[in-house]
Every structure is written in structure tokens, then in C-alpha cells.
Image (cartoon, one colour):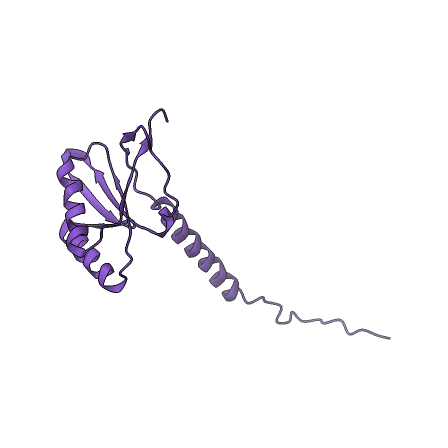
Length: 141
């Protein structure tokens, strides 16, 4: 049996476009997931409580964070999305209208003045949300 040996260079090129597309898709995927991972929780120094308990249902709650920033400014976050107090109030009303069982997990930096925490609680009360728990650190930890 004789095999024919090609004498001319044939079309031996590999199409690189699909491989480049996959590399870019993987790159974008990892960039997006790493950004989301870094935003998981806004860093906050929680206040200390002697009888702190971990709530059984904290995962089912909307996380509202009140963070202290430089210069005495305060930032509000709803599930990692930065909002002002008016937007927070509107979002609480919208969520309560969409789902009557809205529950809040309020995390506030220990440096934040009580008036800012009271503003969040007032926004929740205006929306008809009464189920609020506060994030604290157990004393000695």
C-alpha cells in the first residue's frame, strides 16, 4: 500500500478565533466575579453587644448598611448598592409593595451617629416594615 506524500504545503492552519473568543469570555467572567466577591459586604466596624445572637434567618433579609466615610460623611447601601436616604426610603416602599414580608438586616458602623440609623428605621417604618434586626459583634470577639 503506497501513501501519497504531499509535496506542497496544504491548508494546515488552525482557526484561532473560537479559542480567542473563549479566552476573552473566561477573562470577562473572572473579572466580573472577582469584582462581585470584593463587594460582598461593605466594611463596617459593628458595635459591640454583650448578648449578641446570630439570627437564624439572616440570609432571607435585605441587608441595609450605614457606613462611616472620611470627613464625617455617611453612606447608605441596600444589598451593596449605594443609595441616598431618599432612594433608600423609595426602595423600601417599593419592596414592601412587591412583597409584604420584607425583613431587614441593618448593619451600621459604630462611628455613625444615631440620627442616621434612626433615618433608616424611619424609612422602614414609613414603608410598613417592622421586622428589623441589627448587626452587632459579641463582646470579647
